Image (cartoon, rainbow, N blue to C red; front, side, top):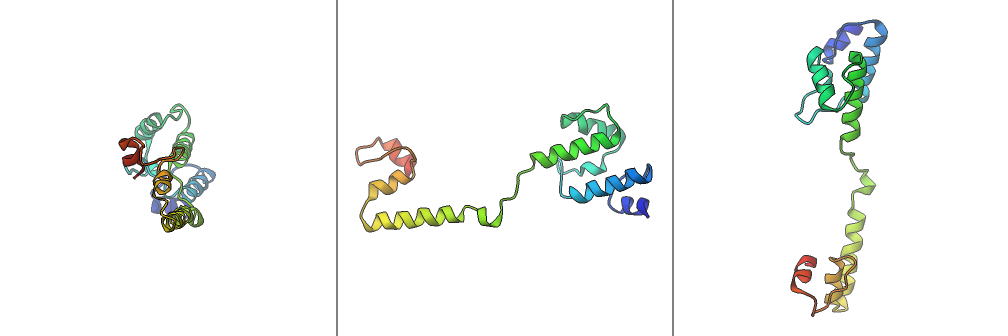
Length: 135
């Protein structure tokens, strides 16, 4: 059964029962991990596994399991994290838009431009490049 599940998921089906279970669990935890060229790290075998380990800065002198685990952990750590739904920046955008509308109601155009240039206070006499950058 374990060998059939391993083949079904594209994993090496050789080794002892414990190794097969370990590979299946690793694949379940990191199913979406891919190399920069789109290759599935779980598909590497033999020399390709050693080359991939070297390419990702993982010790290529260990066992195949150590190399695979090192590659997968490195790729998982380097992968961009998906932001949580509540942390997508929309609240910051809403606050900024509200502030712009408040300043527009007061005809505070210079302050609106200053919002685009953090740390600078822009005026009508500010250098043109600063005004363009803030705009």
